[in-house]
Length: 355
Image (cartoon, rainbow, N blue to C red; front, side):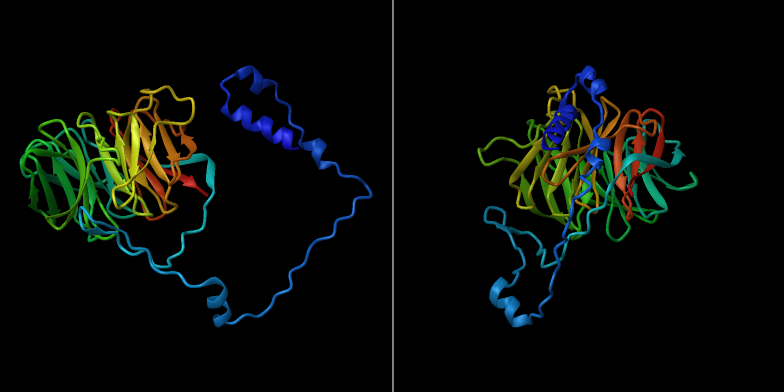
């Protein structure tokens, strides 16, 4: 059985169709057990223990706190909050809803609620749709430029970046307030964090790139270099980002053909460039989001796939059914339903990928 398992793992990694087609299952063979086989199951005998015994033998958990001396930023305490139970991924993700939008070159989607989504395209209009495909609201950007990215805040406001005039703006009702105007930098992607802050990735006039954390309009943290003093991100190309449940900052950097993940303190954790044996440069990540299981989802524009990887950068699976094409923006709702913006078709597709 160990040899069979080893052979099956080899088949998963091979691109040789002949080997896969020749494989014959041996499940029926392993189902047969000796007639005289006797199995004795172990039993568990519970013993009562009190709180003092637990503290004596196992100690206590102290809430995690991380601080970077250079930037003076402290990661919010995780306390003793437990992780959510693992949910199995569907073998074949299901297309739940397909919405036709009026956005030319649909680029972005962000969940206002489980029933309404904000969208952005290649013009000045930000459009809110319900899941019936009905237009609920349309707002023009303050400058008349196309927004670079959008995100919904914890309080339900909509923030967007304006690459052309170097600003970050908040839509509240019908009013638009400019929160931040950058000097020498142009904002790309942004996201609202679990603590109510903003993370923004931006490019400089002199070809540099960094992630900046803002509390209101105050800069709290800047992430630009790895431990060797090399840049984490490139200044050219499309870049979007998302904060994971474990507070990691996940950036889809199309120019380096990678998802770059750093800790909340800004330390590089890993770069994901596709599953093993993926030719360098073929993976082109655009949209990115994370879910309640701390899995990372990114859209591969070149291959019309969505990659799902875990919080440590291990490839889990593709979503490549549901008629997906020209994938761009991604977001998930509170139930881990995935919303995908298709650039050319102008459709938003809602997909269930967990049981």
